[in-house]
Amino acid sequence: MSTRRITDEPAYILHSYDWSESSLILEAFTRHHGRVALVAKGAKKPTSNFRPVLLPLQPLRLAWSLTGEVGQGDIHTLKGAEWVGGHVMPVGDALLSGLYLNELLLRLLAREDTHAQLFDLYAGVVRVLATVDHEGGHGEALEPVLRAFELLLLREIGLLPALDAETATLSPLAPEARYTLVAEGGLRATMAGERAALAGAQWQALQRSLDEGGPAGYTAVLRAVMEAGSPAATELKAQLRALLQYHCGSPLLRTRQLMMDLQSL
Image (cartoon, rainbow, N blue to C red; front, side, top):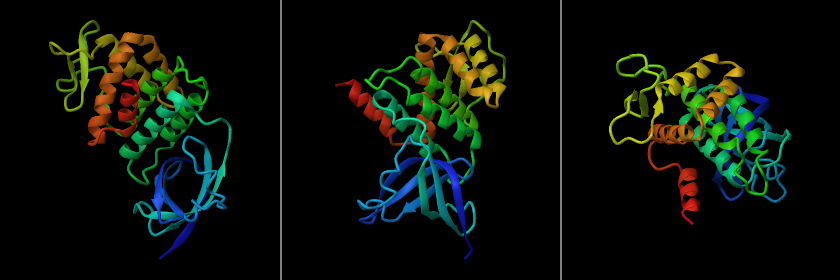
């Protein structure tokens, strides 16, 4: 069986869990290899060089040995980890938001499926989260940043329908009419009693921003979300969260449950 080594790979740790008394299994999001599973042998030992480095929401450079064929979803052996630096750990609401993004990536991305542009977007969002008030404030930019990431994540993995036409009929949206994004039906006219909806013109603006693509795409989507205003952003949040949960399957996202529990205190 052939063995080769990946070195100096930009990465973030999405999740870790125990493997034996002294080691960890890591789920890492990397720029050139997508989501990979790595075993960090001895990482739980007090003397391990890995221990202070393998933290979530921190930019890293990883090295690992790759055994077998690419794309087989094997668990590889971590050989090196270096903290790149550049920002502090998010705290408070920003920390919960970052862990929520990690859970989305963990549940929605297939192993070893490369998403370089999504990686760059995630890295940018994490930098924003690190700037949110360290005294526990929510931060004005936090909610629009999350909505923009959710939209671009859904589009990147092919789960977002066109937002400028009704999904079932492909009919163009009427600017003043109200439409709702639903998991099993895509974008459709809002039914009586439904509260979460946006005007056709707002959906069309979001689609135009998504169409920009490239490095400017995130900025355009963020601007479109902010221009929609607070009430529309709240309704967009409900629809995107329902769509994401549908595709993540059961159980409820742990970070969402934690947020709801904290809000009920």
